[in-house]
Image (cartoon, rainbow, N blue to C red; front, top):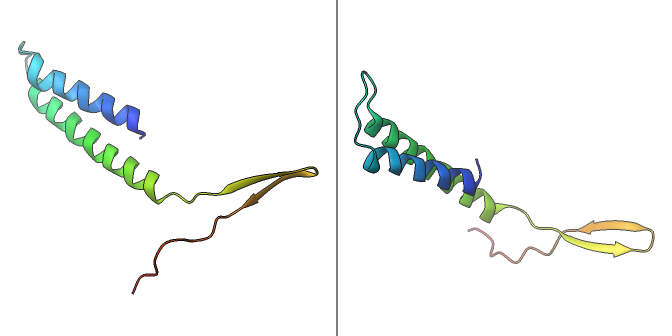
Length: 79
């Protein structure tokens, strides 16, 4: 799940939870809205964590083709 789909689930859940007042038999739209908001929030957190921990590579173009070089690790070592 990406950021866009997570935000869509949060918005859809908020609409179901707060904006719809019609009641259906055996279906609680408020509960479905809360579930969608929670799933969207979890998906958003996972997407952000994966985006920040993703490895980056530098791309250098040579006359004979493309070579991928990894940048130097600038993070501090864990103790």
